Length: 148
Image (cartoon, rainbow, N blue to C red; front, side, top):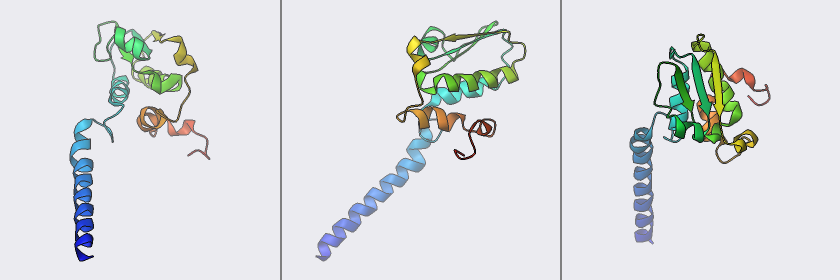
């Protein structure tokens, strides 16, 4: 019986150490957010918070991002294409932030596949791609008090 307890204790210790290593070493290496997922969302939110000097902005789902990479800009257009998981609500918040920092922008284009308009905040992707990236001091006021 003592031998069994020692084996269980060793297994628990190994599992605990591997969990600690994963949480404190590997996950921070994945990206700028808690899990490394949705890194492209954090990237466009950060980009929207800076003045691009552009007179137009292209926003949208992955179709927009495939046509014009979010990592690119030119003198006239800032590209903020992301993915469908941020939904129209996320794109609205992204555009709002962009316009606050880019008053010179006069044109905004929303490039999506039509299905993106019907995309809801589904349970599978909402937390990682919408709640974590967009829930900050600026956006908390959009939530009803009971939701907060």
